[in-house]
Amino acid sequence: MQYRAMTPAEAGQALDAACGILRGNLARFTDKFQYSNSENQFYAPSENLEWTTGFCTGEYWLAWEHTGEAAFEAAALRQVDSFMDRIRRRVDVDHHDMGFLYTPSCVAAYKLTGSETGRDAALLAADNLLSRFQQKGQFLQAWGALGARDNYRLIIDCLLNLPLLYWAGEVTGEEKYRAAALAHTKTSMANLVRPDHSTYHTFFFDPETGAPLRGSTQQGYKDGSAWARGQAWGVYGMALSYRYTRDEACIGLFRDVTGYFIERLPEDLVPYWDLTFTDGSEPRDSSASAIAACGMLEMARYLPAEEAAYYTDMAQKLAWALWEHCAVKDARVSNGLLLHGVYAKNSPYNPIPQDRGVDECNTWGDYFYMELLTRLAKRWAPYW
Ligand code: GLY
View 1 (tube, rainbow, N blue to C red):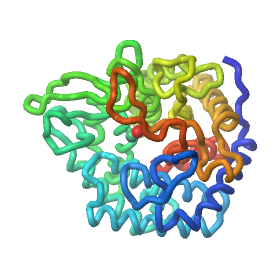
View 2 (view 1 turned 90 degrees about the vertical axis):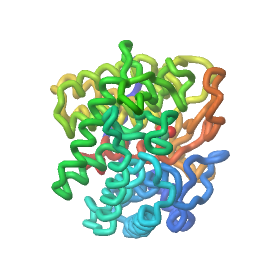
View 3 (view 1 turned 60 degrees about the horizontal axis):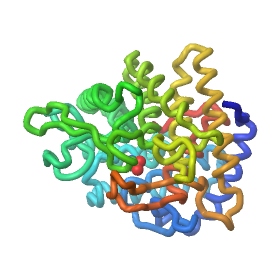
């Protein structure tokens, strides 16, 4: 596969372009957040809801790191106050996505500025996530009423929620956070990766015995296919799991799931929304590529030089492909950063969910695109 690799200087220039768009968004999106996906390429304002608003704040933190402009820091800190209010009042927090919400917003605030509000809000979010740990099965239940049979499952995305628990353990010195994260990682590793190295999106357990039952999908093409973003969560999730556990098995699974992802990239390197598709007219999910590339760069930190160079080169090529095919370069086109994402798409095998955010920007795609550029432009201290 031949493609141009983005250089660090080009990553810096792409960040300049992204920060230009964000600068224009500050007035509209500080007290309000961007809705999770754009419509006709433009985000509408939203209250602090869903699993996606932390990425808006994370983009401002990355923009502040890149430019040093006080306006980005001020906007991010104002949003951190909103996250404290949200967890205190328990607004839309009965799910596991506390890491997606509170790591790029509040943990980042604490790491970058020492914000006590950020730290305290993130610790409350970590406690909320911990409350979803199921002894029977040893996992964090993703969605729904705790213990309910029809929702007694983990999902691959949750690997990105675990750094919040590891961080909470480090900050408080309490072992319970790390113990839950380790148990969940072990259960995920044992059940989510298929023999051909594709991944299940979700996996059910028996609520009475904790026995593993079956894999299924929520947002992929079908239960047996590999939803592109799920596979990407697996790539980044295994890299982060290795960072926190130093378990060599994470490296093996990282190689497996990343190999599967890379082998199914089309010629232009922007994956289709499900890796079942390798050519044709199905929509792409640009966010999957940004997430996977961040995972490759994270894992490259721990690998032998030759292997690290391979994954770094691949991430640089994915970044260049995103810049070429998906990056917004003109605010008249979009107020987002990365075109051609998919939030959810139905299929003949999986008619629920309804199509949503198909061939649109989404906040996580924008955030991980910026994180990817930041990782390529400089040695970056991760929020995760
Ligand atoms: N974590 C939910 C998603 O990737 O759509």
